Amino acid sequence: AQTVTQSQPEMSVQEAETVTLSCTYDTSENNYYLFWYKQPPSRQMILVIRQEAYKQQNATENRFSVNFQKAAKSFSLKISDSQLGDTAMYFCAFMKYMNNDMRFGAGTRLTVKP
Amino acid sequence: EAQVTQNPRYLITVTGKKLTVTCSQNMNHEYMSWYRQDPGLGLRQIYYSMNVEVTDKGDVPEGYKVSRKEKRNFPLILESPSPNQTSLYFCASGRRGVTEAFFGQGTRLTVV
Image 1 (tube, each protein chain N blue to C red):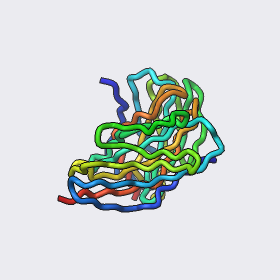
Image 2 (image 1 turned 90 degrees about the vertical axis):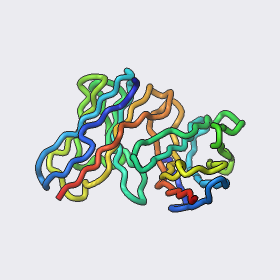
Image 3 (image 1 turned 180 degrees about the vertical axis):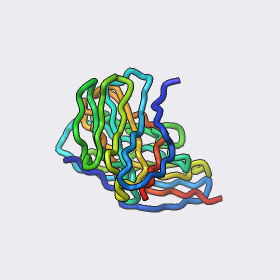
Image 4 (image 1 turned 180 degrees about the horizontal axis):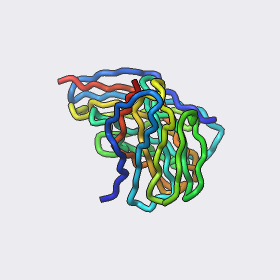
């Protein structure tokens, strides 16, 4: 079974600075997807970024980028130029290729301080 | 607008009183799923469905039922709720084997 581990329950960062959230996973699969979801106080689950395991290039979405290390089974999220609106719970998730079963980490609560 | 709609968003009930949380999606997705979110545990899958009339257990199915009579609807049924089912519940849908999950707004359930 796949497991996803987020080892940082809480983090904080000053506005405009950069922060990195860690995620590791365990799988024997070769093809899969990885995701970062954001959950603001509104509770809505918002997809931040997605990475296909077969792609070597790290995914980027505006201020959000990932460092995907397939051999190390690591998938960290970097938020640049942090904004107050980035304050949220962030979940890392794993999905096997051609299988919708998603596995989530326990989450990291990020606070952006003014 | 493409969306997954859950109702109700908040619910307080008493132990043993049957309840249903509805979930509907308008994206013609084959896959639908229910998760519960608890502090320190992330989201855990309760049940999922890959198509109409096809449902399967997730990691924490005890105390829950689901049905998939129509493609767009996937209700979650608690026949006899207990306090340990107090949680935040999410419904999600997706195209089979292709995309990430699209989530509903969440239902905060309290069982007293």
